[in-house]
Length: 360
Image (tube, rainbow, N blue to C red; front, side, top):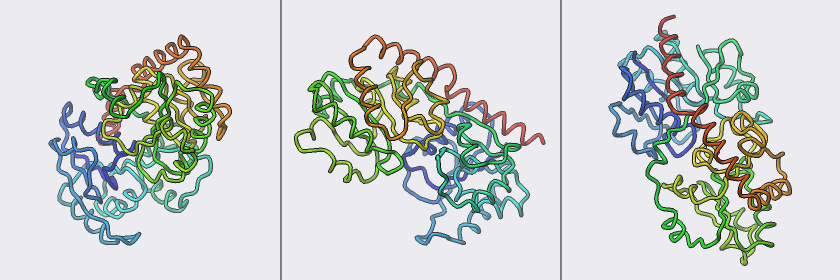
């Protein structure tokens, strides 16, 4: 089989990491001819460059709609002659449609990676890409519902975690020393700094707790502009609520955390929570999107209501004061990731889909 993957970029992100993990195992374990098309030359996941996969860069012009991409992608398609086009994003799907039609190729669409409560995107764009897709994949059931994707061609393939990523973590003492963290407890949230991730709720809860406890630090980790959130923190607490920006060794930093938090409410299956769970950390997650498909309330973590810093404060405090319960939730979380969200299960699901689609 020949499969051509098309994604806007390989910047740091959950969707991008998911594709890279898929490519690593497909190229190693299956007899497939794979190629990737991206529209931005900067690549965060450098390991993809070591794979036996050709990467085509068709740079997008600065203006929003670049008709030249249609022709560039068509040229690559015609030369590579894939059995399947696998697009990862609405933009990639739109630019792939003409080549799919003209060359009569089958297209898998993995653009659904979130599950927003209120859909704010271009409805026409999604209707168009869904119509021309042979199969639509979401990483959560909530995503299919949120995007109103046609049920007859939509399936769920959950994110898969590769435990080899946490096999060689940096020593916790070295991480703590580098970050100048001396408190007994550390709480972490890993997410892009933007409105949808709701760092406001997280920081409000953190401020409430650090005003009464001296044994805890809060980490805010992710790309984007964090300035508005940093302004929320008074100078006296800036050493207890740390903004680390984007980190290369994020798993090692997550490993020093006592628990993981995610207050966003638009996720499909949140990768960062999977990582905390794989590290046996108890988690607290907003009950929105596909989070409840990963976190089972009071069994392997806590689900809290939207934008509720008081409830988040209560759950964090409970875990700090009840270490036995925290350990139990963390262990059960790791078991759930290993049993239900392993990388092998994800890759095998994709491979079977490729086989089935080619056989039609």
